[in-house]
Every structure is written in structure tokens, then in C-alpha cells.
Amino acid sequence: MSKLVLVRHGESLWNKLNIFTGWVDVPLSERGVKEALEAGELLKDYKFDVIFTSELVRAIQTVMLIMSKNSSGVPRIIHDEGRMKKWGEVYGEHGKNYIPVYKAWQLNERYYGKLQGWNKNYAREVYGEEQVLLWRRSYDIAPPGGESLKDTAERTIPYFRGKIIPELEKGKNVLVSAHGNSLRSIVMHIEGLTKEQVLKLNIPTGVPLIYEYREGKLERIGYLTRKGFDTDLHID
Ligand SMILES: O=C(O)[C@H](O)COP(=O)(O)O
Image 1 (cartoon, rainbow, N blue to C red):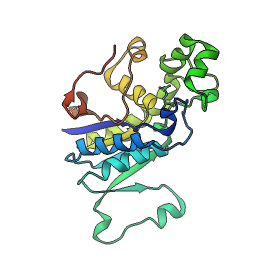
Image 2: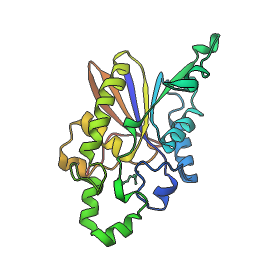
Image 3: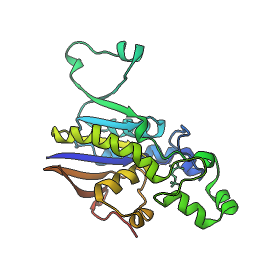
């Protein structure tokens, strides 16, 4: 049996300012750093064999802060090409003692198009509460020039099935660091949620969501909190 741990990055500087972020590459806020360290504390005895993160710095920071508390090994970013790949090779015994970290644009946040950089309250004033909620939470309504959750799923799910599931099948424990909406699309897929249910699914920042992989199936264990497991997905 292997484990899958999904984590949404800690609060970013633009989450704090309530600004649509999408693919804008902004870092964690101080609170986000604390959230990531706290997630690391909760996960400190988990053994990870492989790590996946989006290419955005807030997800990379989160996973590295988590791993700074973890004793399973040293995370090492795997680069695909050029000098970064060649000159980053490791020789000798430490060549084996690391946890590979794969960065994938497919796990990036939903592309928010023309809304990137807009304050969410200002967007509500201009377009109305209901419209903005549909852009943020509906399954197939895309924000202007951006991706709907369905569009996002068209890149996250093939990656999840093609790269992440095979690691679980090999018996590896996997940590994935990504974003509110890229994770909503993955959780929708794992849990078989309907379009109506996904509208109400909000994934909290920095709280690990744990699954166990058994006989080809992912079984939810729950959100790992200081008080133990919260088994509810909180679709209200
Ligand atoms: O991209 C963003 O602004 C956030 O990461 C997620 O935003 P949302 O909660 O509006 O989908």
C-alpha cells in the first residue's frame, strides 16, 4: 500500500492581498511560510519516495519547507535538459540518497487570463458577485481569456494518470504540491465529484490531504490537522 499526499501551497503574497494570481509567479507570505512549516511538522515522520510540484515558486517553496522538517531524504530537483541536467548530476554514494522532485507546468494553477492581477473584490464590483463566483468555482465557465476548471483538468488529469499514478502502482509514497484549482480538478477526478459538488469544493492552504492507494483505488484518509485526521472533504 502506498500513500498520496496532496498539499495546496501556503498563503501567497497575492492570496493575502486578495488578488487573482493564476500563473503569476509570486512567493509565499510570511503566514504561508508558517503554514508550510506546520504542514512539514505534521508530515515529519512520513516517508516520501518521489515529489511532484507545479513550476510556480509558491508550490516549490511549500514543498521545500515541508521537506526541511522531513527525515526521508534530501529533495533534489530533477532538470530535464541542457546544462541544468548535465551539471546537476550526482556521483558517489549520495547519488542514490535523494528524493527526486519533478516540476511540471501541468500542475500549475488554473490560468486566470485577464483577471490575473485584479483584486477579487474589484472584479465583483465590475462583473457582479454571481459571475465572479462562476468564474472561480464552476466546472466549465472560463474567466475571460483564461481556463475553466475543465480546461485545467485537461492538462492535470493526463499528468496525474501518466506520471503520478504509476509511482503509486510501484508502491512509492508520493507528495504533490500544487494549487487551489489544479488540486480541485485532481480531487474531482479521484473522488468522482459532480459539477455541482466541485462548485462547493474549497481546498485549504497548507493542509495535507492524504490518500492510500490500494489495488488500483485511492481511498481518502483525510486532511491531516493538528487535531488528527479530518475525514470530511467539506463540500458544503
Ligand atoms: O490563482 C489564484 O488567485 C488563487 O490561487 C486561487 O484563486 P481562486 O480561489 O479565486 O480560484
